[in-house]
Image (cartoon, rainbow, N blue to C red; front, side):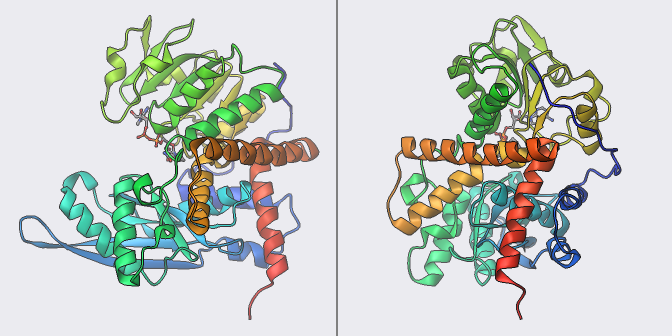
Length: 427
Ligand code: NAD
Protein backbone atom coordinates (compact mmCIF):
# COMPACT_ATOMS: atom_id res chain seq x y z
CA UNK A 1 0.00 0.00 0.00
CA UNK A 2 1.56 3.37 -0.99
CA UNK A 3 1.06 6.43 1.18
CA UNK A 4 1.85 9.99 0.28
CA UNK A 5 4.94 11.88 1.49
CA UNK A 6 4.93 15.47 2.59
CA UNK A 7 7.30 17.54 4.73
CA UNK A 8 6.52 17.25 8.44
CA UNK A 9 5.88 20.25 10.66
CA UNK A 10 7.30 20.53 14.14
CA UNK A 11 4.94 19.97 17.06
CA UNK A 12 5.00 23.42 18.59
CA UNK A 13 2.59 23.15 21.46
CA UNK A 14 2.40 20.58 24.21
CA UNK A 15 -0.98 21.88 25.36
CA UNK A 16 -3.48 19.23 24.27
CA UNK A 17 -6.51 20.86 25.89
CA UNK A 18 -9.48 21.10 23.52
CA UNK A 19 -9.28 24.92 23.34
CA UNK A 20 -5.54 24.92 22.52
CA UNK A 21 -6.09 22.26 19.86
CA UNK A 22 -9.04 24.11 18.34
CA UNK A 23 -7.09 27.39 18.09
CA UNK A 24 -3.91 25.69 16.81
CA UNK A 25 -5.81 23.96 14.03
CA UNK A 26 -7.47 27.22 13.02
CA UNK A 27 -4.08 28.97 12.74
CA UNK A 28 -2.55 26.06 10.84
CA UNK A 29 -5.27 26.00 8.19
CA UNK A 30 -5.26 29.81 7.94
CA UNK A 31 -1.62 29.70 6.78
CA UNK A 32 -2.87 28.16 3.54
CA UNK A 33 -5.71 30.59 2.92
CA UNK A 34 -6.09 34.25 2.13
CA UNK A 35 -8.15 35.22 5.19
CA UNK A 36 -7.79 38.64 6.77
CA UNK A 37 -6.58 38.92 10.37
CA UNK A 38 -9.98 40.48 11.20
CA UNK A 39 -11.81 37.39 9.97
CA UNK A 40 -9.52 35.09 11.94
CA UNK A 41 -9.95 37.20 15.05
CA UNK A 42 -13.74 36.73 14.81
CA UNK A 43 -13.29 32.97 14.51
CA UNK A 44 -11.03 32.77 17.57
CA UNK A 45 -13.92 33.84 19.81
CA UNK A 46 -17.43 32.51 20.35
CA UNK A 47 -20.29 34.81 19.30
CA UNK A 48 -22.12 34.21 22.55
CA UNK A 49 -21.52 32.46 25.88
CA UNK A 50 -24.54 31.96 28.10
CA UNK A 51 -24.10 30.87 31.71
CA UNK A 52 -27.21 29.89 33.67
CA UNK A 53 -28.10 28.61 37.12
CA UNK A 54 -30.30 25.53 37.11
CA UNK A 55 -32.02 24.91 40.46
CA UNK A 56 -33.89 21.68 41.19
CA UNK A 57 -35.60 20.00 44.13
CA UNK A 58 -33.57 16.94 45.08
CA UNK A 59 -35.54 13.84 46.01
CA UNK A 60 -34.64 14.42 49.69
CA UNK A 61 -36.46 17.77 49.57
CA UNK A 62 -33.37 20.02 49.44
CA UNK A 63 -32.74 22.52 46.66
CA UNK A 64 -29.53 22.30 44.64
CA UNK A 65 -28.29 24.74 42.02
CA UNK A 66 -26.21 23.55 39.08
CA UNK A 67 -24.21 25.64 36.58
CA UNK A 68 -25.13 25.34 32.93
CA UNK A 69 -23.62 26.74 29.73
CA UNK A 70 -24.42 27.22 26.10
CA UNK A 71 -21.64 28.52 23.87
CA UNK A 72 -22.46 29.57 20.30
CA UNK A 73 -19.37 29.88 18.17
CA UNK A 74 -20.09 31.19 14.68
CA UNK A 75 -23.32 31.25 12.68
CA UNK A 76 -22.29 32.71 9.33
CA UNK A 77 -23.35 29.50 7.52
CA UNK A 78 -26.59 28.87 9.45
CA UNK A 79 -28.09 28.22 12.90
CA UNK A 80 -25.98 26.87 15.72
CA UNK A 81 -25.79 23.11 16.19
CA UNK A 82 -24.10 21.06 18.88
CA UNK A 83 -24.49 18.68 21.77
CA UNK A 84 -25.36 19.25 25.41
CA UNK A 85 -23.44 17.20 27.93
CA UNK A 86 -23.93 16.45 31.62
CA UNK A 87 -20.48 15.98 33.10
CA UNK A 88 -18.47 17.35 36.05
CA UNK A 89 -15.81 18.76 33.68
CA UNK A 90 -18.22 21.00 31.72
CA UNK A 91 -16.95 24.60 31.64
CA UNK A 92 -17.28 27.67 29.46
CA UNK A 93 -13.79 27.01 28.08
CA UNK A 94 -14.48 23.37 27.23
CA UNK A 95 -17.79 24.32 25.59
CA UNK A 96 -16.02 27.04 23.57
CA UNK A 97 -13.46 24.57 22.21
CA UNK A 98 -16.10 21.97 21.38
CA UNK A 99 -18.32 24.62 19.77
CA UNK A 100 -15.41 25.68 17.55
CA UNK A 101 -14.84 22.06 16.54
CA UNK A 102 -18.52 21.80 15.64
CA UNK A 103 -18.18 24.87 13.40
CA UNK A 104 -15.34 23.17 11.49
CA UNK A 105 -17.12 19.78 11.42
CA UNK A 106 -20.33 21.27 9.97
CA UNK A 107 -18.34 23.22 7.38
CA UNK A 108 -16.30 20.14 6.34
CA UNK A 109 -19.60 18.36 5.70
CA UNK A 110 -21.02 21.49 4.02
CA UNK A 111 -23.98 21.50 6.44
CA UNK A 112 -25.76 24.87 6.87
CA UNK A 113 -24.92 25.17 10.57
CA UNK A 114 -22.49 26.91 12.87
CA UNK A 115 -21.01 25.26 15.95
CA UNK A 116 -22.37 25.29 19.49
CA UNK A 117 -21.92 23.23 22.64
CA UNK A 118 -23.41 23.32 26.09
CA UNK A 119 -24.06 21.37 29.19
CA UNK A 120 -24.43 21.24 32.92
CA UNK A 121 -21.70 20.73 35.50
CA UNK A 122 -23.04 17.54 37.08
CA UNK A 123 -22.24 13.87 37.45
CA UNK A 124 -25.45 12.40 36.01
CA UNK A 125 -24.96 9.15 37.94
CA UNK A 126 -25.70 11.11 41.15
CA UNK A 127 -29.20 12.06 39.94
CA UNK A 128 -32.29 9.87 39.77
CA UNK A 129 -34.52 9.95 36.68
CA UNK A 130 -36.91 12.50 38.16
CA UNK A 131 -34.07 14.84 39.12
CA UNK A 132 -32.54 14.50 35.64
CA UNK A 133 -35.89 15.34 34.08
CA UNK A 134 -36.33 18.41 36.31
CA UNK A 135 -32.78 19.54 35.58
CA UNK A 136 -33.33 19.19 31.84
CA UNK A 137 -36.68 20.97 31.81
CA UNK A 138 -35.32 23.88 33.84
CA UNK A 139 -32.20 24.04 31.63
CA UNK A 140 -34.45 24.23 28.54
CA UNK A 141 -36.37 27.10 30.14
CA UNK A 142 -33.19 28.99 31.10
CA UNK A 143 -31.91 28.66 27.51
CA UNK A 144 -35.24 29.33 25.78
CA UNK A 145 -34.27 32.79 24.52
CA UNK A 146 -31.10 31.60 22.79
CA UNK A 147 -32.15 28.22 21.35
CA UNK A 148 -34.77 27.43 18.71
CA UNK A 149 -35.21 25.36 15.54
CA UNK A 150 -33.79 28.16 13.39
CA UNK A 151 -31.43 29.55 16.07
CA UNK A 152 -29.60 26.81 17.96
CA UNK A 153 -30.44 23.10 17.93
CA UNK A 154 -29.01 20.95 20.77
CA UNK A 155 -28.44 17.18 20.57
CA UNK A 156 -27.38 14.43 23.01
CA UNK A 157 -23.74 14.26 24.03
CA UNK A 158 -21.75 12.82 26.92
CA UNK A 159 -24.07 11.97 29.84
CA UNK A 160 -27.25 12.77 27.91
CA UNK A 161 -29.37 10.64 25.57
CA UNK A 162 -32.54 10.58 23.49
CA UNK A 163 -34.69 10.78 26.63
CA UNK A 164 -32.86 13.94 27.74
CA UNK A 165 -33.51 15.72 24.46
CA UNK A 166 -37.14 14.49 24.43
CA UNK A 167 -37.66 16.23 27.82
CA UNK A 168 -35.85 19.32 26.49
CA UNK A 169 -38.14 19.38 23.45
CA UNK A 170 -41.25 18.90 25.59
CA UNK A 171 -40.30 21.71 27.98
CA UNK A 172 -39.51 24.09 25.10
CA UNK A 173 -42.72 23.15 23.27
CA UNK A 174 -44.91 23.68 26.36
CA UNK A 175 -43.74 27.29 26.66
CA UNK A 176 -44.05 27.94 22.92
CA UNK A 177 -47.63 26.69 22.87
CA UNK A 178 -46.95 24.25 20.03
CA UNK A 179 -44.93 21.08 19.44
CA UNK A 180 -41.52 22.01 18.09
CA UNK A 181 -39.64 18.80 17.16
CA UNK A 182 -36.93 20.82 15.35
CA UNK A 183 -35.64 22.31 18.60
CA UNK A 184 -33.42 19.25 19.16
CA UNK A 185 -32.04 16.31 17.20
CA UNK A 186 -31.26 12.82 18.43
CA UNK A 187 -34.86 12.41 19.61
CA UNK A 188 -36.69 9.07 19.92
CA UNK A 189 -38.38 8.19 16.59
CA UNK A 190 -41.77 8.37 18.39
CA UNK A 191 -41.40 12.17 18.55
CA UNK A 192 -39.70 12.91 15.24
CA UNK A 193 -36.27 11.31 15.67
CA UNK A 194 -34.69 9.83 12.59
CA UNK A 195 -33.76 6.29 11.70
CA UNK A 196 -30.04 5.68 11.50
CA UNK A 197 -28.85 8.42 13.91
CA UNK A 198 -27.31 6.02 16.42
CA UNK A 199 -25.24 4.10 13.84
CA UNK A 200 -24.34 7.23 11.86
CA UNK A 201 -20.92 8.15 13.36
CA UNK A 202 -19.76 4.52 13.10
CA UNK A 203 -21.11 4.31 9.57
CA UNK A 204 -19.22 7.44 8.49
CA UNK A 205 -16.04 6.04 10.09
CA UNK A 206 -16.48 2.84 8.06
CA UNK A 207 -17.18 4.72 4.81
CA UNK A 208 -14.09 6.87 5.26
CA UNK A 209 -11.93 3.84 6.16
CA UNK A 210 -13.13 2.10 2.98
CA UNK A 211 -12.34 5.19 0.86
CA UNK A 212 -8.91 5.58 2.49
CA UNK A 213 -8.06 1.92 1.81
CA UNK A 214 -9.13 2.37 -1.78
CA UNK A 215 -7.12 5.61 -2.14
CA UNK A 216 -3.93 4.02 -0.86
CA UNK A 217 -4.21 1.11 -3.34
CA UNK A 218 -5.78 -1.30 -0.91
CA UNK A 219 -9.28 -2.68 -0.62
CA UNK A 220 -11.75 -3.07 2.21
CA UNK A 221 -12.07 -6.71 1.13
CA UNK A 222 -9.64 -8.63 3.34
CA UNK A 223 -8.20 -5.50 5.03
CA UNK A 224 -7.24 -6.04 8.67
CA UNK A 225 -8.79 -3.63 11.18
CA UNK A 226 -8.29 -2.94 14.90
CA UNK A 227 -10.89 -0.89 16.79
CA UNK A 228 -10.27 0.67 20.21
CA UNK A 229 -13.61 1.23 21.98
CA UNK A 230 -16.47 -1.12 21.16
CA UNK A 231 -19.23 1.40 21.95
CA UNK A 232 -21.67 3.28 19.72
CA UNK A 233 -19.02 4.49 17.27
CA UNK A 234 -16.54 1.58 17.34
CA UNK A 235 -19.03 -1.30 17.24
CA UNK A 236 -21.01 0.17 14.36
CA UNK A 237 -17.85 0.90 12.36
CA UNK A 238 -16.52 -2.63 13.04
CA UNK A 239 -19.80 -4.31 12.04
CA UNK A 240 -20.09 -2.40 8.80
CA UNK A 241 -16.46 -3.00 7.80
CA UNK A 242 -16.91 -6.69 8.66
CA UNK A 243 -20.02 -6.83 6.44
CA UNK A 244 -17.98 -5.31 3.59
CA UNK A 245 -15.40 -8.08 3.83
CA UNK A 246 -12.80 -6.55 6.15
CA UNK A 247 -11.22 -8.73 8.81
CA UNK A 248 -11.68 -7.05 12.22
CA UNK A 249 -8.88 -8.70 14.18
CA UNK A 250 -9.09 -6.75 17.46
CA UNK A 251 -11.61 -4.74 19.49
CA UNK A 252 -11.47 -3.38 23.02
CA UNK A 253 -13.43 -1.68 25.76
CA UNK A 254 -12.24 0.20 28.82
CA UNK A 255 -11.07 -3.06 30.47
CA UNK A 256 -8.98 -4.35 27.55
CA UNK A 257 -9.38 -6.13 24.24
CA UNK A 258 -9.57 -9.38 22.31
CA UNK A 259 -7.54 -10.43 19.28
CA UNK A 260 -7.88 -13.09 16.60
CA UNK A 261 -5.46 -12.84 13.69
CA UNK A 262 -7.92 -14.64 11.42
CA UNK A 263 -10.70 -12.15 12.25
CA UNK A 264 -13.22 -11.94 15.11
CA UNK A 265 -16.83 -13.00 14.72
CA UNK A 266 -17.94 -9.37 15.10
CA UNK A 267 -21.69 -9.98 14.71
CA UNK A 268 -21.68 -12.25 17.74
CA UNK A 269 -20.10 -9.65 20.06
CA UNK A 270 -22.51 -7.22 21.69
CA UNK A 271 -21.52 -3.56 21.90
CA UNK A 272 -20.32 -2.03 25.12
CA UNK A 273 -22.73 0.06 27.13
CA UNK A 274 -25.53 -2.06 28.49
CA UNK A 275 -23.31 -4.89 29.61
CA UNK A 276 -20.09 -3.17 30.53
CA UNK A 277 -16.90 -5.24 30.43
CA UNK A 278 -18.42 -8.16 28.55
CA UNK A 279 -15.53 -8.38 26.03
CA UNK A 280 -13.49 -10.29 28.62
CA UNK A 281 -16.08 -13.08 28.44
CA UNK A 282 -15.78 -13.45 24.64
CA UNK A 283 -13.99 -16.60 23.53
CA UNK A 284 -11.04 -15.27 21.48
CA UNK A 285 -7.53 -16.70 20.92
CA UNK A 286 -5.86 -13.79 22.71
CA UNK A 287 -6.66 -11.09 25.25
CA UNK A 288 -4.70 -7.87 24.88
CA UNK A 289 -4.42 -4.48 26.53
CA UNK A 290 -5.61 -1.22 24.97
CA UNK A 291 -1.98 -0.16 24.61
CA UNK A 292 -1.15 -3.36 22.69
CA UNK A 293 -4.17 -2.93 20.42
CA UNK A 294 -2.94 0.49 19.28
CA UNK A 295 0.38 -1.05 18.18
CA UNK A 296 -0.99 -4.00 16.15
CA UNK A 297 0.25 -4.47 12.60
CA UNK A 298 -3.05 -3.84 10.78
CA UNK A 299 -4.19 -2.03 7.63
CA UNK A 300 -6.54 0.29 9.55
CA UNK A 301 -6.45 1.38 13.18
CA UNK A 302 -9.65 3.03 14.48
CA UNK A 303 -9.29 4.72 17.89
CA UNK A 304 -12.99 5.08 18.80
CA UNK A 305 -12.96 5.38 22.59
CA UNK A 306 -11.52 8.56 24.13
CA UNK A 307 -9.20 11.48 23.31
CA UNK A 308 -5.39 11.68 23.43
CA UNK A 309 -4.62 7.93 23.17
CA UNK A 310 -2.10 8.24 20.32
CA UNK A 311 0.73 10.23 21.86
CA UNK A 312 4.40 11.11 21.48
CA UNK A 313 5.14 8.00 23.62
CA UNK A 314 3.45 5.38 21.44
CA UNK A 315 3.33 6.98 17.96
CA UNK A 316 6.66 5.50 16.92
CA UNK A 317 5.38 2.00 17.76
CA UNK A 318 2.11 2.22 15.84
CA UNK A 319 2.30 -0.24 12.94
CA UNK A 320 -1.03 0.48 11.23
CA UNK A 321 -0.93 1.67 7.60
CA UNK A 322 -3.86 4.09 8.03
CA UNK A 323 -5.45 5.66 11.12
CA UNK A 324 -9.11 6.66 11.01
CA UNK A 325 -10.20 8.75 14.00
CA UNK A 326 -13.52 7.48 15.37
CA UNK A 327 -13.25 9.29 18.72
CA UNK A 328 -12.92 13.05 19.00
CA UNK A 329 -9.26 14.07 19.31
CA UNK A 330 -7.59 10.65 19.78
CA UNK A 331 -4.27 11.88 18.29
CA UNK A 332 -2.15 14.48 20.08
CA UNK A 333 -0.35 17.12 18.02
CA UNK A 334 3.03 15.55 18.81
CA UNK A 335 1.78 12.13 17.65
CA UNK A 336 0.39 13.74 14.50
CA UNK A 337 3.88 15.00 13.70
CA UNK A 338 5.35 11.52 14.18
CA UNK A 339 2.74 9.99 11.89
CA UNK A 340 3.52 12.61 9.28
CA UNK A 341 7.23 11.79 9.47
CA UNK A 342 6.41 8.10 9.30
CA UNK A 343 4.07 8.62 6.35
CA UNK A 344 1.02 7.17 8.11
CA UNK A 345 -2.13 8.97 6.95
CA UNK A 346 -4.48 10.07 9.74
CA UNK A 347 -8.06 10.65 8.59
CA UNK A 348 -9.32 13.28 11.06
CA UNK A 349 -12.29 13.10 13.42
CA UNK A 350 -13.99 16.16 11.92
CA UNK A 351 -14.54 14.13 8.75
CA UNK A 352 -14.56 10.53 9.98
CA UNK A 353 -17.15 10.72 12.77
CA UNK A 354 -19.19 13.55 11.17
CA UNK A 355 -21.91 11.06 10.24
CA UNK A 356 -23.52 11.92 13.59
CA UNK A 357 -24.08 15.61 12.90
CA UNK A 358 -24.89 14.86 9.26
CA UNK A 359 -27.76 12.55 10.20
CA UNK A 360 -28.82 15.13 12.82
CA UNK A 361 -29.09 17.54 9.89
CA UNK A 362 -31.29 14.97 8.11
CA UNK A 363 -33.47 14.81 11.24
CA UNK A 364 -33.79 18.60 11.19
CA UNK A 365 -34.77 18.49 7.49
CA UNK A 366 -37.41 15.84 8.26
CA UNK A 367 -38.90 18.24 10.82
CA UNK A 368 -39.01 21.08 8.28
CA UNK A 369 -40.55 18.89 5.58
CA UNK A 370 -42.87 17.04 7.99
CA UNK A 371 -41.87 13.78 6.28
CA UNK A 372 -39.83 10.98 7.80
CA UNK A 373 -37.16 9.20 5.81
CA UNK A 374 -36.64 5.44 5.69
CA UNK A 375 -33.42 3.99 7.12
CA UNK A 376 -32.33 3.25 3.55
CA UNK A 377 -32.85 6.90 2.51
CA UNK A 378 -30.83 8.09 5.51
CA UNK A 379 -27.97 5.69 4.78
CA UNK A 380 -27.93 6.52 1.06
CA UNK A 381 -27.86 10.26 1.73
CA UNK A 382 -25.13 9.82 4.34
CA UNK A 383 -23.04 7.83 1.88
CA UNK A 384 -23.43 10.62 -0.71
CA UNK A 385 -22.52 13.38 1.79
CA UNK A 386 -19.47 11.45 3.02
CA UNK A 387 -18.20 10.88 -0.50
CA UNK A 388 -18.61 14.58 -1.38
CA UNK A 389 -16.66 15.57 1.73
CA UNK A 390 -14.00 12.92 1.08
CA UNK A 391 -13.49 14.24 -2.46
CA UNK A 392 -13.20 17.83 -1.23
CA UNK A 393 -10.43 16.79 1.18
CA UNK A 394 -8.72 14.61 -1.38
CA UNK A 395 -8.46 17.59 -3.74
CA UNK A 396 -6.71 19.65 -1.02
CA UNK A 397 -4.39 16.77 -0.07
CA UNK A 398 -3.31 16.43 -3.69
CA UNK A 399 -3.19 20.11 -4.67
CA UNK A 400 -1.49 21.47 -1.56
CA UNK A 401 0.49 18.43 -0.39
CA UNK A 402 -0.93 18.65 3.13
CA UNK A 403 -2.15 16.05 5.63
CA UNK A 404 -5.77 14.96 5.68
CA UNK A 405 -6.26 16.89 8.91
CA UNK A 406 -4.92 20.14 7.48
CA UNK A 407 -6.97 19.51 4.32
CA UNK A 408 -10.13 19.18 6.43
CA UNK A 409 -9.47 22.49 8.18
CA UNK A 410 -8.67 24.18 4.87
CA UNK A 411 -11.97 22.97 3.36
CA UNK A 412 -13.88 24.12 6.44
CA UNK A 413 -12.19 27.46 6.77
CA UNK A 414 -12.43 28.35 3.10
CA UNK A 415 -16.19 27.66 3.14
CA UNK A 416 -16.59 29.81 6.26
CA UNK A 417 -14.39 32.53 4.72
CA UNK A 418 -16.51 32.56 1.54
CA UNK A 419 -19.67 32.95 3.64
CA UNK A 420 -18.09 35.80 5.65
CA UNK A 421 -17.07 37.57 2.47
CA UNK A 422 -20.50 37.15 0.93
CA UNK A 423 -22.37 38.43 4.00
CA UNK A 424 -19.96 41.16 5.10
CA UNK A 425 -19.72 42.49 8.63
CA UNK A 426 -22.76 44.26 10.07
CA UNK A 427 -23.14 47.15 10.86
P1 NAD B 1 -19.55 4.82 24.09
O1 NAD B 1 -19.61 5.17 25.52
O2 NAD B 1 -20.73 4.20 23.41
O3 NAD B 1 -18.33 3.79 23.85
C1 NAD B 1 -17.03 4.08 24.28
C2 NAD B 1 -16.20 2.80 24.23
O4 NAD B 1 -14.87 3.10 24.62
C3 NAD B 1 -16.67 1.72 25.19
O5 NAD B 1 -16.39 0.46 24.62
C4 NAD B 1 -15.79 1.93 26.42
O6 NAD B 1 -15.65 0.75 27.23
C5 NAD B 1 -14.49 2.29 25.76
N1 NAD B 1 -13.59 3.08 26.60
C6 NAD B 1 -13.91 4.05 27.48
N2 NAD B 1 -12.80 4.56 28.04
C7 NAD B 1 -11.77 3.89 27.50
C8 NAD B 1 -10.37 3.96 27.65
N3 NAD B 1 -9.82 4.82 28.52
N4 NAD B 1 -9.60 3.12 26.92
C9 NAD B 1 -10.16 2.27 26.04
N5 NAD B 1 -11.47 2.16 25.85
C10 NAD B 1 -12.26 2.96 26.56
O7 NAD B 1 -19.07 6.15 23.34
P2 NAD B 1 -19.26 6.53 21.80
O8 NAD B 1 -20.55 7.25 21.64
O9 NAD B 1 -18.96 5.35 20.95
O10 NAD B 1 -18.12 7.63 21.63
C11 NAD B 1 -16.76 7.27 21.45
C12 NAD B 1 -16.00 8.49 20.95
O11 NAD B 1 -16.60 8.95 19.73
C13 NAD B 1 -15.99 9.69 21.88
O12 NAD B 1 -14.76 10.37 21.68
C14 NAD B 1 -17.13 10.54 21.34
O13 NAD B 1 -16.95 11.91 21.67
C15 NAD B 1 -16.95 10.31 19.86
N6 NAD B 1 -18.16 10.59 19.06
C16 NAD B 1 -19.35 10.02 19.37
C17 NAD B 1 -20.47 10.32 18.58
C18 NAD B 1 -21.79 9.71 18.89
O14 NAD B 1 -22.80 10.23 18.36
N7 NAD B 1 -21.88 8.62 19.64
C19 NAD B 1 -20.35 11.19 17.50
C20 NAD B 1 -19.10 11.74 17.20
C21 NAD B 1 -18.01 11.43 18.00
